Image 1: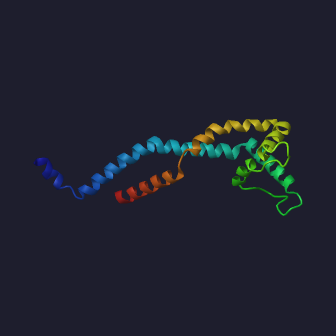
Image 2: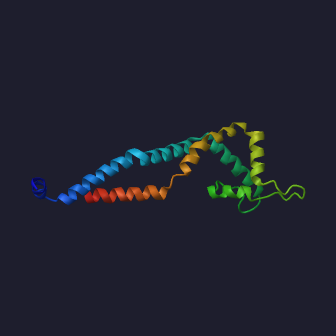
Length: 154
């Protein structure tokens, strides 16, 4: 009974308890999975951004695309969208004997023949595949949740 009386005298008790609980939960989440996910994304972005091999591979893809589109309105392009990479496996050979070969196969053959140093771009795959599993929507939802909780705690 004495404890209840002493607690009853604390101003804004409910808000204070909610703020303390939110702080404890936020610290656990931030120390745990969220920080790991953000670090993973940051590391993957930095590795992709700094990769000379990946830039060289994209240059080969751009050169092949420009060679195929020479003389058209799409020829002599300065760049391409990353979604265009998916089309490399869709464009197939018109050769009657081999309709299984795609533009992707051709690009790989060009890289093997002319730019062997680009092969090390596969070292990025483990880092990128781990980062690809992270949901940006979930991270954004957690960020909004944390911002709302901090505002309520104030």
